[in-house]
Image (tube, rainbow, N blue to C red; front, side, top):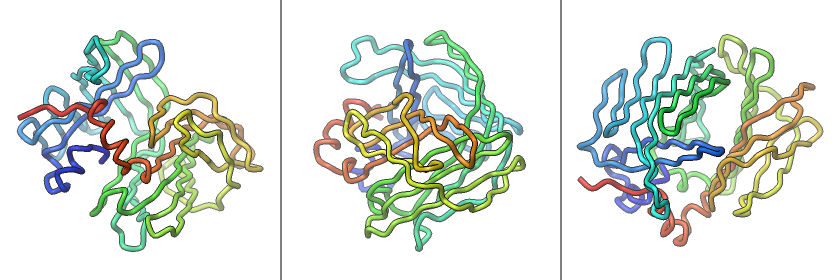
Length: 271
């Protein structure tokens, strides 16, 4: 959905613009997001292959087999990114939510909480921890529907809370807080107070929701001209939480400068 090639093509053939995005942070950081033409894509009800990488649903888990390379233009090493990520849902939610009145944008939190196993061969590392699985779909591009949004997810006991808010392209606002119980059933709850966060280094505005409107950034993991991903600390419903937070600025995304920069980070395979 952020592909400059897909945008330039008029978005008429999405399968011709497929990629698997892998972002590893820390001392062994890697980034992979190489776009492939439709000849490199195969799919059925339970699997998706994009070149050498593939994703499969095994019945109780989503297994992501990664065979990529860090091909950012100014990365001199072109290092491999290879391994397996397995997502075991702790809960399944079968309800999607429209983000606009025309149902042009649907957000579906498939597994509000999951157990994740990561076993990487390149770079050599592994860990297990808590995770999350969702997806967005729509009949128009994100920048046609929205100017910006903020999203966060936290675990509270055996439950999960997701806060989602933003401004649509027509300047109307949307905001919701959902609490998912241990079975995955969502409940709309009162929104906590707005909690401003410090801007990212690229000056992307960030905010979340928290008790007393107080939260702080612990670590910024992804920092780009139009998108940031961070770990934050706050309190929700009386509980101290560490949450994942994302902010997206689609006015920035559509600027000619950002569109010029994107291919240097997201190469496309010819075919």
